Length: 402
Image (tube, rainbow, N blue to C red; front, side):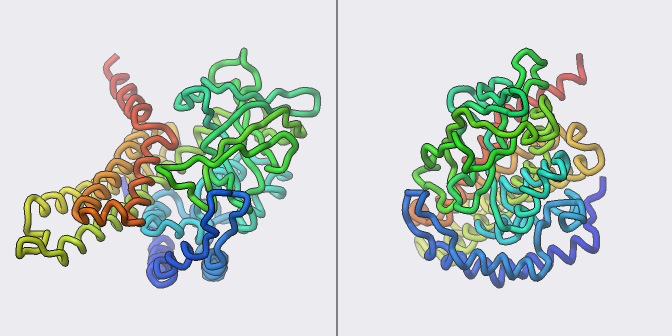
């Protein structure tokens, strides 16, 4: 098991760290100030500072760092990209600055591996250029989408067309004015095997029959300017060549898409936890009560120590998952990927909760800590809830004994 980073990765890490510290973090408030500030997603605009920072990052070559294929990205494998993702996790706008933001990263990975040349030209190239954004329409309001085989949405092949019907929600990025397409998952053949009945379809957001119903709030926040939408697909008719890799391969492709994405999410969560711990320690050192710094009161030192150890444990397990993915592929890394998907968000939630607690009343109204807590709690459900991933770990563990 080798966690050594390549020379290329070490160079990228240093460049990204410097850019985050010197250009991104100091401009977070500017980004927030430039938001439109409305819940009406139809009025949302992209803050100019975002496009300015993206242009700078692109000029420096800090662009599409998540793709291991040098034709499209930086040539970093999962072990090398993981610490880069952690650095970007320290700022809520950093992933987009480097064109490494979800769900675009997963959608790009799908198109690189499974897309036709026509699909790559139409959708992948502008996505990797940062000219457009995308969404992933999988989760449904009417069924437990943690079990993808429950899916009710359909994509029926009729002649030379594919016809989409269904209602999706938590389609992230659907409110972004730059979003140009969704990857839609639906049932093509209900009589096929459980894992052969689905297909993935590329859907232009302006296709007739596609309708955004609303943006879903996350603990009261609408997440301008990207949003998480409920989207209706009503008799959407597209050319059959809009299906990715042909009918019946949706489940296979989706599972492959989620493997690297979960590592990216978890490493960003670890970076966010580091920022929460920084806030916790700064408050503990500088705030005085009963004549002492908070760091010398109660069990605060235990809390700080436990937070430090938990973050480091989560990082090591995530690096193990990245190594397993690089050396054994998605199915060889199933246990580790599921394990980190449980652990990393829970560590972020725990450390952020401690940071809020030590800030007292101020912690409940602190925008950054509120954002980190919302991110942590959402990640415990997104890309599979804790219970599903624990179930996967337990099933594969018990398999050794039967």
